[in-house]
Length: 178
Image (cartoon, rainbow, N blue to C red; front, top):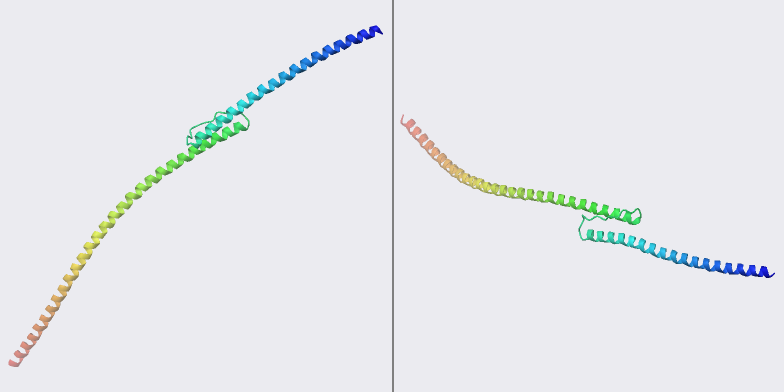
């Protein structure tokens, strides 16, 4: 029985030593796992924060009108999608601005052409007005001359009638004498 008690006592001591050793290993593993989790959390959060900060900087520059910026994130997660979409948006805005600039230049050219055409039409209208005034003056002068010719014609007709009457009277006098 004493041997059994000694064996039992030694087994208890060995069990307690194993328990202390296992507890120490468990504590060391737990501390290591927590430290590793904290380090991984910091690394992952810094990576995410860095990518988010990069996208924020790019979107601020785009908002300020700098459309030639490019976000460089090549991850295959939501941040990568956001980065690719932001780059596509900046490219599309550059294309829109380019088209607006091109249309503005065409509009400026068309406006210049219309200005020249309007000036030409204005000059043509002034010339037409001057010519119309000349024609009106000539028509008025012709009307005055025609009235003068008509009056002269009436006077000539009256003189011819007087001559005709005088000729008739002379003929009648000649006929009476003969």
